Amino acid sequence: MLRWTLTIFLSVIILSSALPWLQKIGLGRLPGDVRFRLFGREWVLPFASTVLLSLIALVVGRLL
Image (cartoon, rainbow, N blue to C red; front, side, top):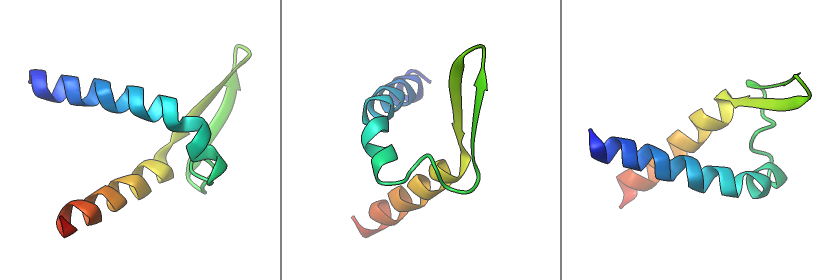
């Protein structure tokens, strides 16, 4: 349980820091990604980008 919590925490930190770079290459703006403004802040729910990154990670994991 502690390993999964640590893994998720580190993944969130890494993806949050890489978000501006990932948006430049188009992730976060795919059809299926939801963006909305609430209380003056922009919220992003990247459903399609998450699926795409998961598939890429799966392929890389299978090849290694």
